[in-house]
Image 1 (cartoon, rainbow, N blue to C red):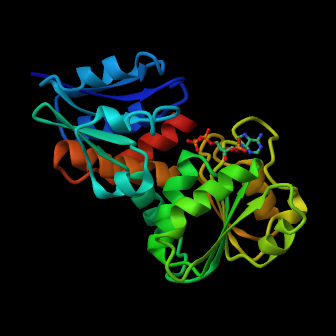
Image 2 (tube, helix red, strand yellow; image 1 turned 90 degrees about the vertical axis):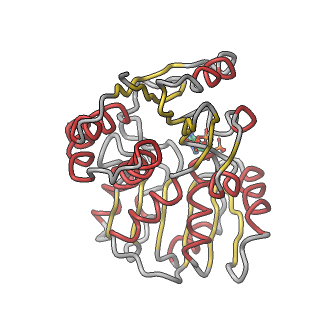
Length: 278
Ligand code: ATR
């Protein structure tokens, strides 16, 4: 029986997960189709119920369903529970298990980029679902200081409160994107991460070019375009840069392994991602 997989989102046209996963399935000779499933918030419960069918291996979950899907599942693995968001669902004999591979995917991308562990002052731009997973990964990583910056300050403060119990010796604080104190934080940071959606549309900048720290590793989780204005500004100032493609592929690879039990063909998945973005 051919098996099915898919990504649930709304909208979901922009997702390149189908290209990455189909290439991996084909490479390993697994008889399965990875589809794109546009599902409205109202239709989510009924759609998730269909994932219990025996021909479905599982699904990815993307914007805006990563949090809404939690109560529809039978079981959460530890990362999903700690982060409070699910990006991967596995159908285990009709029971739905939720996991979050975004945090581990981000950590692997950071490791491959040569960022030192542990330590460092980190500025994280954004306080949505993606930022939640990254903040979780950074606490596990063991940074010294984490500043969570958001356009709407209360959302950053809420994320800081949620992380505080697990922060240990990490100094964790919230800051508004428009705050005058942001410039000093940026100048002193070793790692800057954009986890907002700013940069997907041409010319969109989350920071002024002069705010971008020259001595930091600058990471943008936006992968399309591959070089966002933030990354172009960072490179022009001499900073090291990392775009969103490695995080995307590593989170996909971890999901693939959960569904199939097979080692993911990473080179094939990277090639498919680059082809889809070309
Ligand atoms: P995701 O799950 O992908 O993180 P999200 O939960 O909608 O998506 O979060 C989007 C993030 O991008 C938020 O941090 C949002 O800031 P607000 O909480 O203040 O809205 C940020 N964001 C989106 N558009 C922005 C813009 N034009 N300027 C600054 N921040 C923006």
